[in-house]
Length: 78
Length: 183
Image (tube, rainbow over all chains, first blue to last red; front, side, top):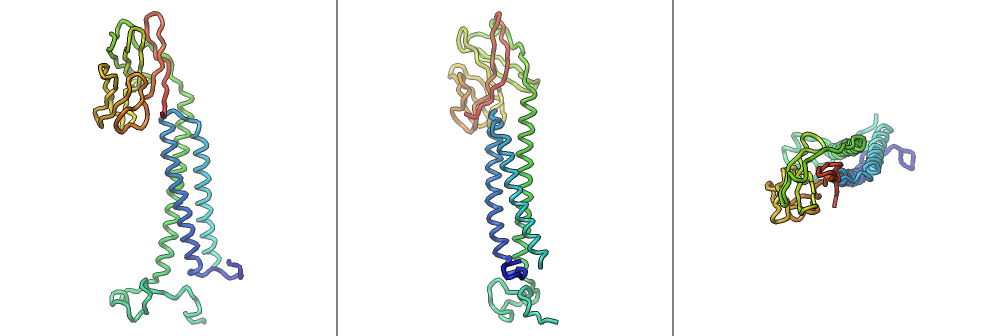
């Protein structure tokens, strides 16, 4: 619901979903870079960053999943 | 019962913003709820990206798992050859640490031996030693590695060749470990 206590209309949800899309896209690109950098480091024998990178990737996924969950919530309140 | 105009979500605007009666015939014949269409498209794209995000996370944990397994499975030392078997400037191919991990031993001088994995770090083609030029050459994409250090000199290889640690005792050469490097 918005500040006035009314559920969001579709017109109001549109910029929300677009903002989410940009945010999720940035996180996914970050994860792709993280995966390639980690793979390169792993193949080069540098295992020090492997677990921190996995945790960072998990945090990115948790943020993305949280946003999707929030979007579902917005739709359910209608 | 409320009229449709009371609910803003039921208003459908064509993509060009013109009134419905000015739309082309095909759009009038097959009207769809364009704003809803755009909303669902973006929402589903967000969901798809989140699944992609999950796949990347799974990939990260797969690498972490492989790294952990590799740390548990340290290679044991293995005899490669006798010193007398390799002439100065000569080379010898051997398998280490496993049966299918081909490596090259090169004798640089009377007492200097180096060994590297034979797999090119680009696409795993077998590198060929060229002792006269002091390089390993990858024939697939013209990659070159320095024979003394294993570092890449030219071509697409992204990393140096993994170095095989050697131990020479009583005229015998032993491989004792593999050193992967990023630079």
